[in-house]
Length: 564
Image 1 (tube, one colour):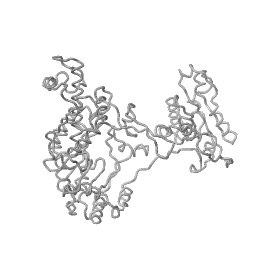
Image 2 (cartoon, helix red, strand yellow):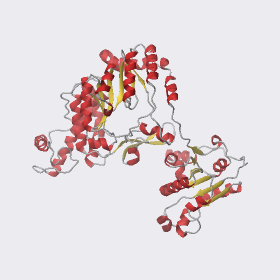
Image 3 (cartoon, one colour):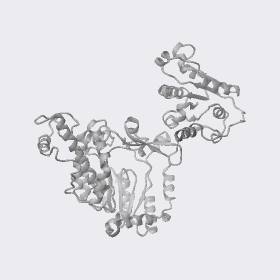
Image 4 (tube, helix red, strand yellow):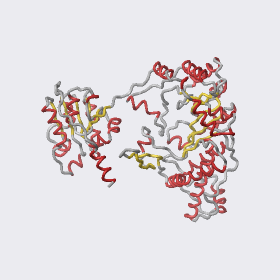
């Protein structure tokens, strides 16, 4: 009974007002409606009939004084009689062109929408039908249509044609492209934040209580932090990142990188310091604060000139931003931490994700940062859609090698979340997903956690990790009496778990293949493939360890747990 009630609520809803009368004063418009197109082959192989939906809307608008017509691309594909769609579009200077969309015809319909935009760039393009209603974000984002009709089309189309204010028209979704902030407006908006009134102290107190008797100056310097952003976007275009595309897609055009001026940023920091006496660190949270080296050096100069280097600073940065001159200036301004998107120590993976960073540049920069005592926090992504097991392995080993030195920190994620607006979201479909109820409503929502790897072994690694990591990490926290289980503190546990799973997968390969002295030669088998320098040592070691190790034998030798 509950399911029946749920269906009725979704399908029929509550009673709604009906539109009884309408102002029909009009300026005659030329309107063309185009029905769904199945494609030439499907058009010839199916049974077709006149498209009554678009015919009804066109007839209604014609009755109300507009020059409204319809075109059936399926009929033309079958008999080639009359004008083609292209000829129909060219013959008349249409004011409005409407498209009826179905799921099964969507790709062909989008071709027709783009054709209409090309031939009649000034016409208002409108989409309707079942697919447009239930998929309106994609229609508005990925076609030139500016309006989607919800439900029946007669009234909204007539009101659009009669030039009613869009706010007064029922049953439409309108896309009005954004405008990016100018340099002046960006400064003004950032300065408008009431820095003096924000209750940072309440946030800091939460963590002071959490740490209890372990609270010390090092922890206080990390916790008593105020975040400031000074740039509108990152232009790099990494395939997993949605923020890099947000403004360009919103504005449907090119958006320059706009930064708060160095002087304006210094003014904000002065306000913060004067208002919050216990602040210890300023965290510049732009996706890439150091992308403009000249600007960063100028900022550091102003920090020194204004004696603001009694505060500590941290920021996001890319490996390719950092040379010794920049790092020297960061040191003078008292930068103590950099959040760096290393992502992977595999060049193959870096190229796959669009990182634009040669892997050989990573180690020299990390060593320079240690030379100047600026701690790097390395963001690490262990699996990507096309990762091979050896890519994961080299990144795990290299990251473990670094974090054995307490100077280095890392944050580990097992895979890439398919965020809407990213290239990876558009290019892949095999996601780890679940359906969640929206509390106190009849609706549900699909949530996508990760992109499953295409490689069989890496997919298995992801599955085992996701099945075991919660209990594994819980035990690690308890065993090590961790008060604040943040990313840096838990990084060793995540890496060691992944390393154990990789060994488990390798062991299973040896058993399955009965290798003995037979070499595993397939790419993707981890670093035990043909011509690998570690192959022989690996096989010998695994022979003695086979069937003796499992995920319950967990050791964390040589890694010191440090504060992030």
